[in-house]
Image (cartoon, rainbow, N blue to C red; front, side):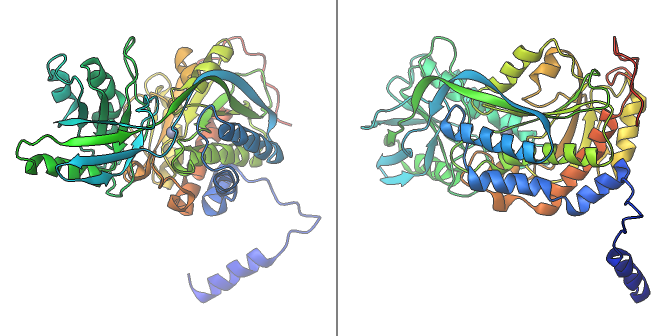
Length: 472
Ligand SMILES: [Zn+2]
């Protein structure tokens, strides 16, 4: 920009709008651009909830404080019909910080955290020989009963990918290894963290025990500690590696959680709404900034920006789900309560706060005109269309149960699994510029969808919808 241009721009910014010339309402495109340039709302949300509430373990009083905080934020931000929809859930809490110690032949302690739904060793802990498996498949192949009295160690390595697809490869180590080991009579399981960093931070997360298998103690070792344990096996010369494990989580039985909902009411509230989802709960180790304070911040900010460009035709509803991490209880409860209320389209933000790079829908072939319009509208933000059918996120059960329309706005996941479910999930890891890019793309896409007059999945008429009210 040359000096004359700079001066002109400065002048244009400096001239205040007078009472006689009301500033024109921005178009949707302008609102999205403005969000990209200076959105304050998403940062305000995620900075606020991580500072004033912090971690929000599902089913606990901390999660309840998170709901109260979100209700207040939505109300003061102009959302209508803000409410908590409570539900009951089986609640697990982590207990005292976990301890893992190699007793012999190379005594030292390792950094560990229990996995969600882990059993307890009791405060005295257990000491047993460790048996190493490189993969879940190797563990699966171990003969029945061969792990009796032993601690199974599964050491599978995860690598970084932009689309996060490695989670599908590495995830089973966390999801099923403990259940398999327990069914082969292991007394406990430790895994290499399902994560891509090299910090001494264990990555927690949920695990599953099969029907009829009693939960055994299970913890994730940090990646460098798991690597250390692997080296011990190379140097042990056949000597048994003995570990003392102390994990003291507890099951609290049924406690209350809840979903928080709020709306930007549309001009025709009887049309099926656009549903934007995220989750409010987090694991206890960090403050739930990238997982998923940022997602709630992004969807709420985008809904606000769409309304700045004019009241949308359809209602935009935000669903800040409870208890996602420990078993999608909020998503299931929402679907059960609202299955008979058609949703026009569902979108979810739950993959951190880094930039959106790809867009997918499940109506590319049935409503190609809309898919193309969205694709061309987000190209200026560096987002390209993919060809897969969008599966929708974890908190969109209601849309999947209705076999409805889904849009996925995929974020760059390259560093997501460095931070995921660790003490490093904190506000300072959020890049404000990338957070604003998310809000800009969401504003553009949600604005298009919320003003769509025809059925989003098929492009056909909206079934049994009353005549559309005229824009005032
Ligand atoms: Zn999440």
